[in-house]
Amino acid sequence: MKKSISILPVTAFVLFALCSCEELLDKVGATIDSGYTNVDFTVNPDQAGTYFETIEVVSSDLDSIIEAEGQNVGELNSVKIKDAGIQVMDGGNLDPFESFTITLEAPGKAVVTVAEVTSVAAGLTEIPLVSDEVDLTDYLKSDQYTIRVKTVLGQDLETPRMLRAKVR
Image (tube, rainbow, N blue to C red; front, side, top):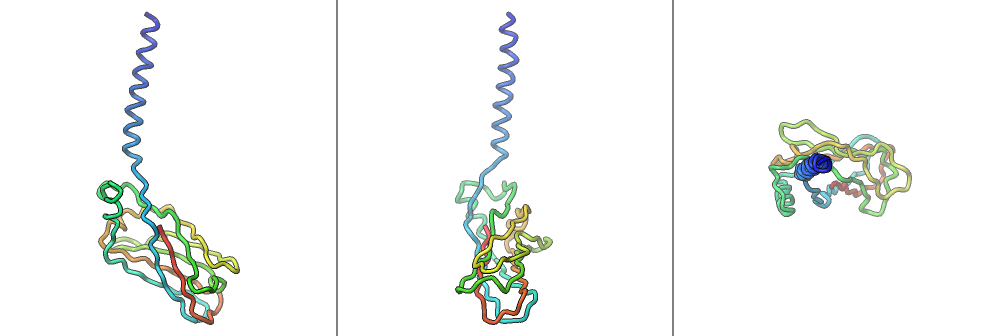
């Protein structure tokens, strides 16, 4: 009889644990790799200072990307930047630049910084940006949003520099 009593609580605990794990799996969701969104821009010769490149994304394809993965955009819990970077597209380097910041904005929402780097080492042609742990779900559910790249020139730029900001 003693063995039956000890098996009953163990069985109840196992059943409870299995149910809890199933609920947890339902809440975890899926990770969807959407590929990079590229913002190509040219920084023209100019004096040291702060400059902006703005790309307005009029129609977001976030819905189709999510649905292709068998998910529903209405059930999104969180959208975060996986990684971001800046790369030179014309054979130069990033020496004239001091920093880069990528922001996102949508109608009715505050501007949010999604990735940045505050120091650029000499000789680089590509640099990763530090992604902020910001939930972008409300921004990307919008029909339109704007990606803005802010560059700070630490020294005068003598020739145009073609750059690409990559975010995914």
